[in-house]
Amino acid sequence: MNGRAQLADASRPPVWRMSWRRLLLLPLFCYALREVGGDIAVQVISNSTSLLGGSTNLHCSLASKENVTITGFTWRKRNSDGSHTRVAVFHPKNEPYFAEPDRVKFLADKQGNGLRNASLAISNVSVEDEGTYECQIATFPRGTRSASVWLNVLARPNNTAEVLEPSPSLTLQDVAKCISADGHPPGRITWSSNVNGSHREMEEPGSQPGTTTVTSYYSMVPSRQADGKNITCIVEHESSREPDRLPLTLSLPYPPVVSISGYDDNWHVGLTNLSLTCDAHSKPAPHSYDWNTTMGFLPTSTKRQGNQLLIPTLEGLNNTIFVCKATNALGSGQSQQSILVKETPENVQQNTGLVIGSIIAIIFAILSAIIVCSIVWKCKHGRPLRSRPVENNVSTEVQGRRTKGSKWTTDLFLEPSQGDWADSCSVASRFSRSLACVPLGGSGNFWRWGLVGEG
Image (cartoon, rainbow, N blue to C red; front, top):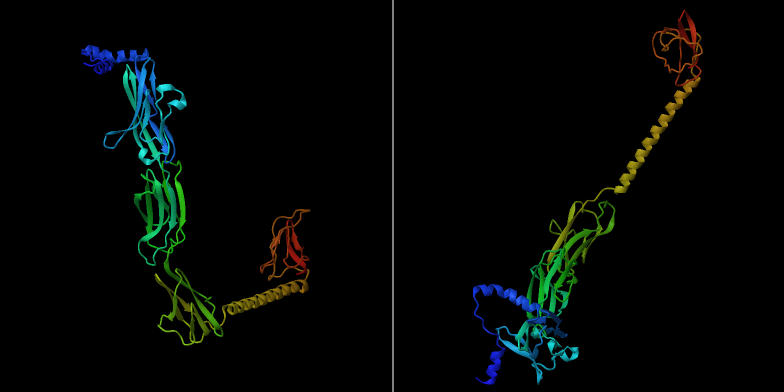
């Protein structure tokens, strides 16, 4: 056996034949070796992220309390098929090897950590650099130790959105699109909208190797209700904490929506030079207007003029229903207006009613004043009552017992009845304050009373 073979055998750990009792004690034995510094390990940061075109460091170093000799570093990248490709190799006695010397180098000299630091620096990172890297550190006499690092490469996409000009047809078609270009991984596109629609997307390779461009189309049937509404394209990507929101305002074609103006429900005999206007809202604008009636023909006194119908006179147009039809590239829309010709203007009728009502109110007020004045005059200038007992046709209501010094407050009214006997009398008149009760005769507490004064 030659010397190289002896060295290889010497560096190879011995193979023990252990019983199951010794095998149970092995974890405790290894833990003891770690505590006393009998083991070595490769320390790495397991995940590293870099933006496309940027720089990154893959950290790797040896952790050991033993006095071991490092004989070299090797970085390998794992391929998709399981094989490995050498990226960088360092040996103390040889020049370092780099698969791409313009972009890859060791950090050991820069950081001053000697041979224990095997960290690797990569500049101008590309999507192809993404993957698993294995850091191997060869030592003597402990052999080779290794650990893996995952390099994640992000390409921030360029996001844009725009509205599309749909064709003039009422069919399902694309009305907006959103593009997330040159992203890695691909951007995720969603839509926010309060109008009914659907979306579809497609992917294609980006302009940079390893990147992807995603295009999403928003589709719907054009309508007046959706025209001018806002929709938002939302793009999410790992390179940004917040999603990118791109608002759009839809511009959609739709057929004419028609109404007729010019008639105010107060057309009457005698009016001349009137007109009706066909108001059409559409996109694109109407290219033609057509006026007609429900009878299928226009009166000879009317004249078409674009979206207007000229009506020189209202003679013979009572209860006529006019129809306007507007047409654009997507279709037609129509509206109709009934005409009622009155004998007199509505405001004249209202004014006449107000005048008549006012006259009636004035006459009623005058009559009421005359009646009131007559009553007052009669009250003031009627014939006097004589100082004699009240006749059967007029009497007073009496109440209570006579009390000296009392004040009479009860309102009494004259009514056709017999005179009453009582011990007291009080009287009040609605039309005169000069009436008074006078005793006409009696005895004890019962007296017959009469009235004197003007009444």
